[in-house]
Image (cartoon, rainbow, N blue to C red):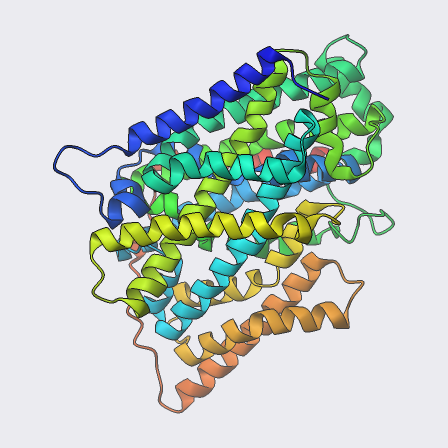
Length: 524
């Protein structure tokens, strides 16, 4: 299926717009040379609305448009738990984690671990994240986006991967986080509006042209099983979303790890003008999160009701684009999908470069590196990371049915260990460096052992169990070392005043919590 000339013009115009804006915001004043703060933290100048928009644009990638729509087709509204729980998690991060990060003035999450523990932990996690971003995150975003591009434009997946990578490189490698964040503001508008257009048309098609409201009612009528937020044990997808564990178990580990300790998410917060701006940015992102299921999950359910002719779940969204969206609008909807891909690709490239430059190159390879050298290394690593991801994407992911679940499972191998390291590091003064190192080393082996020992256990439950085991390891080694007279220096100082928030912040937070609770009560 090919796009019309008008659709192609809209799509290409969008790509040109992003490149031009990215290069324009990256320019420097006469006489000023871009330094590491400019390149990696956008000169610490981002306002709250840019932070919130960039967070959502970076998060909502092909994983959601393609992967989560595919899971919506297969599982239903229950997969939206990742979005609703994320909204709550963003509030916790804004109130309890970010005040500490900004107080310490860090560039990267591994840098915080050095402050709290030692350089061994910093280097270990730096390597973990670089591998994770390149071989899981970048590859999945590239592959899923290329899958949609190949279906709509009738080109090979390989050609689509090359095209996407080329556009992302064109504006993000030179400009750094400033280019990424400000283009994200444009991209979040396109991805939400374009996504809502696709949802509208899908629901209208379900109703036979009688409007989206009637179409939504017909979804409830024709596929009531797709609107269970908490799956029962006899549900064929219970292993993906294991009932009450969604609310009280391993999903918290996944969300806290992603939103609280993930470099390519937190990096936007570190680039804020001040703490107030970043906290409101996360509240804004939390409200946007509540809208995302309308954009990425409902279309998948609609494709199911429309009996979409697809061979795998992740073809549901491309099928909608190809069969329901009219000329002109199709170009806009497709631009929304590509916007999601480009924003995530550029974010991950920049964060991979930031970690390598600050935690490996500057820390170990060239301690006296100049500002210019760090910026150049950052640009080179960005380029190399996307090239590697492009080479391995299709061989690695070509046989996966639900790639969104693939991402959750394999990032889940490291998530429990990351959460243990940071939570105990932030809030338990007795946690020692040796205990942290043992936890970091044990994280993946523990996850693999639990996976092999309990192959039928849902991966969210596996994450919860690994978290408990790693917590016991951290506490046990720390207390033993404490008993031997070895106490951590604990260079990160906590002040209760750090966690005070404005009354209006608390009002908005309560409103978000109420909305999330109401959704689960209605769709239990």
